[in-house]
Image 1 (cartoon, rainbow, N blue to C red):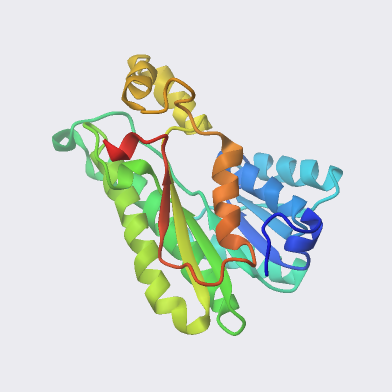
Image 2: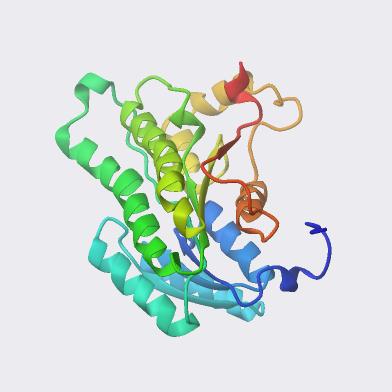
Amino acid sequence: MANWFAGEPKEQLAGKTAVVMGGGSGIGKATAQALCAAGANVMICGVPEQICLDTAEELKAEGGKAIGMFCDGTKQSDIDAMLTKTVEEFGGIDMVVSTAGISLPRTNALDVTEEMWEKIFAVNVKANWFIATSAAKYMKDKGGKIVLVSSGRGDRAMENIAPYCTTKSAVMGMVRALAVDLAQYNIKVNGIAPGYVMTPMVEKVFADNPQQEAYVKSRTPLSDFTYMGSLDEMAEAIMFFLHPINEYTTGQTITLDGGWSIQ
C-alpha cells in the first residue's frame, strides 16, 4: 500500500520534471522547494525574471535540480519557449503548477475599465489556459498532473473586486473542464483555492486597505488560533495532487481558508 509518509522524501518524485509558473515567490516558491525536496527537476518561470533565477540558484545550493527562466504567461510564444527549454534541459514534462494571478485596486464593477478587465483576464485566465493546455501536449502520451491555483474568492464574492472574483471562478471552471478533456490522456487536473495567505499580493492588499486584515480575522472561524494560511500548507496541498499516491482525483479544487467559506 502506498504511504504518503513512507520512504525518503527524495524517492517520491525522483526523475519527474515539474514546471512551476510563478515559482519565484509566494505559493509557487514554496511548491518549487517542496518539489525539489521530493527529488523532482523543476523549471521555475514567470516574471520578473530575476526572482526566478534567484530561486533556482537557491534551490540548487540546497541540492535541488532547478532552472529559472523569464516567461510572460500571457504570451503563447513565451510559454512555448519555456516548455521547449524545459524538455531540452530535463527530457520531458510530468507536472505543471500555475500560480499565475494578479489583483486590481478595489473598484466598483461599474467603474472597471476595459483596460483593467483585459489586464486581469490576461494574467488570471489566459496565462493559466496557455500553460495548462500547452504543457498537456507534452504529457498526453504518458500522462501527467496539472494544478492551478485559484482563490476562495472564486466561489465567494466580495464587494469591489468583481474582476478578481470572476477570473478566479473561471480558473475553477477551467480545472473541471480540462479534467474532462484531458482524462483520455491520463492527465489529472486539480486546483487549490487559498484564503488569505501572506503572499506579496496579500501584503499589498493589507497595505492598501489597513482595515482588511481586521475584517479577515473577524470572519475566520479559526481566528482564535490562526487566520492566515501558511505557504507551506498551500504547497503541501498541491503536493498531494502531484504525489504518485493520487491516481483517482481529478477536476477538484480544495479550498484552504480557515473556514471562511463555510459561514
